[in-house]
Image 1 (cartoon, one colour):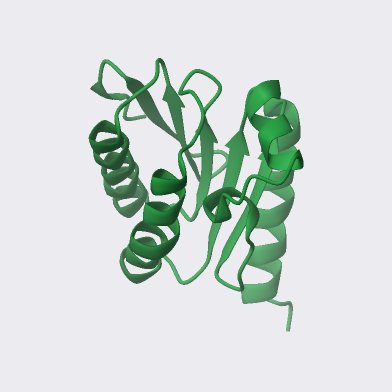
Image 2 (cartoon, one colour):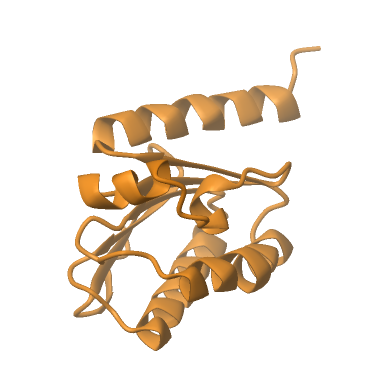
Length: 146
């Protein structure tokens, strides 16, 4: 299990879930956010992990700039370097979730595509359950019984 990178985050890999987990410990600047995401990418490549849990409860609100960077630059890089399909569970604070429900246009969190499936959650149990079920479906779809 790899843990670390900076004082702002903790990154780990859970082999039992084939999932990279990042937990922001405090708000970060846009530059720090991008560096943190590149650390996620490095860990995901190392473990060939296409399932991610991003705990943003202590990070603060995601900006439109961060969302756009994820959607248009980061996710394509992930698809090129890690896997052709990625699952991203976003763990949000109630205030962050409320912003989404009120119509915040954060495509990095809310816009599913055929290759990046993403969903926001308020509890870690819900996020983990969704990731486990989604990974199982992916494995079944990629390796159907003969």
